[in-house]
Every structure is written in structure tokens, then in C-alpha cells.
Length: 230
Figure 1 (cartoon, rainbow, N blue to C red):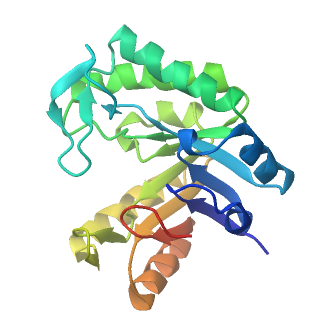
Figure 2 (cartoon, rainbow, N blue to C red; figure 1 turned 90 degrees about the vertical axis):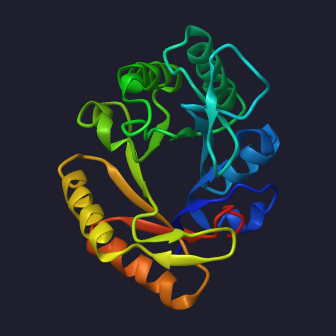
């Protein structure tokens, strides 16, 4: 029996990826022939898209602020050039053989809340470009309930367990776990696939993450900080 989902940001490993129903991959790391091979094995491939951060060269839509963890530049989501750039990425991913898209960096409510309406507009444009392919959103809770009408599933990244730094992992404190549980219960109101992605380096923390995800109706995948584990 295949596992429900995998998040893997490396390349190759087609045989191991075939053990999963869905796999989220970096769009530039896989050729059309490799994606076709996974599709022939019944694997549903989702290509990664960042909707509010840009790791590319300097561009007019970039803000001066950068993500302190990964180095990408935050963007003005409503910039027409950025919107066209992301929709073009979505178009190329689907044309290249991906069966859907994974929409990342949706949490702007604490940093650039003025961009939330633009973010919904961008997701709607991606929905039109990719229809009827599968869209999985990473969090984006401040975009609900409108988001629920545009995507097929929601991922709750770091639902129970988190990376602390490049070498250490831990469960969230009890108050954060309680808040995450409240959000998860609200997600059950929507007709969406629900997934959890947690970070752990040991059996006890891994088991805790899987068990807690089940309690809240989510299918779980556990990996390391760099998503290099299958």
C-alpha cells in the first residue's frame, strides 16, 4: 500500500518516489520524461511554486527585505511583472508534465497583510491556468474562506514538530500545539484534502507527529529541514 504524500526537494530517486500517491517536487529538477515515468507508475506529481518570495536575480518586484532562513527576497505580490512571472512558471510546470502545483509562501498576514488580496488574485490566476489540475496550498489560513474555493487541498506545515536550527528538532510548546489544533478543527469545515508536514530526526518525535495528525484528520509526512529525506 502506497503512502499518501511526500515532499522531496532533491532530484532523481524515481523508484523511491513511486511509493507515494502524491509527491511535491522542485519543478526545475525533473524532466518531462522523468515526470512521465512517475505518472506511468500512478504517482501524482505537484510542482513547487513560491507566491511571495523570489530566489532569482534582482527584479523590480522584489522588496529590500529577505527571508532570514532561506535568503529569498520578499516581493510586492501585486506587481504585474511578478504575477506574470509566477503564472508563467505555473504554465511551464503543467506543460512539462506536472499533474498539479504546490503553492508555497502564503503566510503574509504578519509581514505584508496589504498583499493578501493580491495573493488571492494570483492564486485565482493560477487556478485558471492549471484547471483542472490539483492545487495544494501551504497554510494560507488568512485567505480562508476564499482560498477553499480555489484549491483542492491544504497543507499544515510544521503542525506538531518543527526544526529549531539546521541540526535540532522539537515539538511545539503546548500553547502553540493547542492553537494549531484549533486551526485544524476549522479546516475540517471545508471540503478539502488535509495534510501535515512535520520535521523530526528521531522515532519518538516522528511518531508523535503522525499520531497527532491522525487525531485531526490529516495525512502526514515527516522529513528534515531541507526536505531531503524520502
